[in-house]
Amino acid sequence: MTEVDAMAMRDRFDWTERLTIVLTLVFVLSLGLVRLSGSAVAWVVWGVAMVLVSGIALVLVNRSERPAE
Image (cartoon, rainbow, N blue to C red; front, side, top):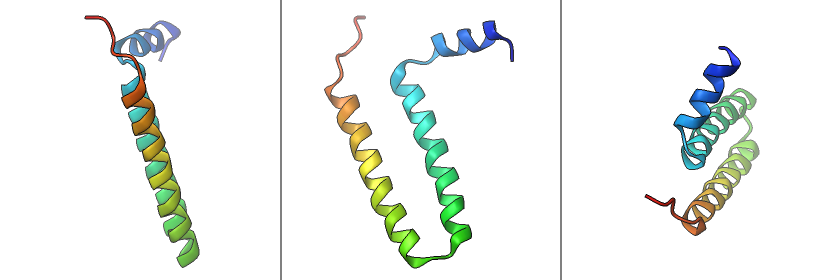
């Protein structure tokens, strides 16, 4: 991917869509790590962390200014 392609993709998605992509990647990658660990404590910590991260993301998006149309 060239720098021009990366800039075009960045312009295609607004910050909330980029946030969704990042959160999805964090969710999937961290889920894989926790699954490999097999620890019950890790599952609980992961669950709490994902609730906090998604809650913070929802608050940020809901309190943001709407783009001018």
